[in-house]
Length: 251
Ligand code: MF3
Ligand code: CO
Ligand code: CO
Image (spheres, rainbow, N blue to C red):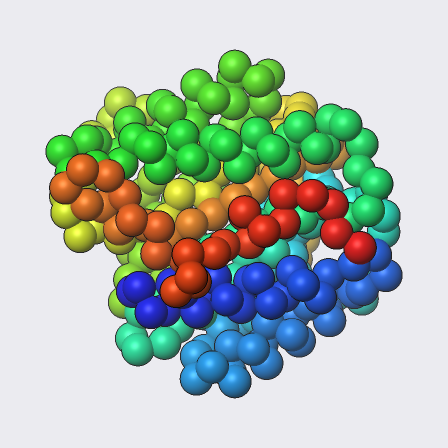
C-alpha cells in the first residue's frame, strides 16, 4: 500500500505539472493512463463499473467522477484530478483540486478550506477512534467556513479492492460507529461546496454536479490508521504530494 500510494502521488504530481489553461481533460487522461502503464500499474478507473476513462476530471460545478473529454480548461476554472492506480495487488487513490490562472476569491477560499477540511478529518484518525469522528471533524470545519458538505459521495476502504465495504462519510452520523484499528486502510475525500451540497447526475450516469451550479472542491488521500494517528500513504518517497505543491494557481 505504501509503494502503490507513492506511485499514485507521483502520477498525480506529474499530471498536475502538465495542467495549464488550454489543455483538454482528454489530454490529462492520456497522460495519467500512460504514466500509470509506464510504471507497471493499471489505471483503476478504466472499465471500473463501466467507467470509460483512466482518471476523473471534475471542473467547477462537477462534484466528482467527471469524464475526460474535449473540453479545454480556461483561466478561472478549478479542476479536481482524481488518480487511482493498481499495482502489486492493491490500489492507491488520491486527488487534488487545482486552480487555473486567475481564480475568483470565493473559489480560492473553497479550495483552501477543502484542503484544510481533509486534514481535520485525518487528524481524527487513530486506533480506537470511530469512523464518525472523521466526518464530525470535517463537517465542523466546513460549517465554520460557511461551506456545504456533499453527502452522496463518501470515503471508502481501499486495498486489494478499489472500494471495500467500509464507508467514511464526510458529515457527522453517529451510526457510523465502526472502531478504527491499526493497519486499516481507507480514503478521506471531502467534497465541499460554496452553495447547496445537493448533487444531480448527468445522463452519462457518472458526472455528479451541484444542483445550483455553484462550485465544489475535493481533496483525497489514502491513509493507514496507526496506533496514535494516520499515515498518509499517497505521498512520494520524498514525502511530497500535489496538495502541498499546488496551493497557488497554475498556468
Ligand atoms: N477515485 C474515485 C474515488 O475516490 C472513484 C472513481 S470511480 C470511477 O473513490 F469509476 F469513476 F473512476
Ligand atoms: Co476514493
Ligand atoms: Co479517488
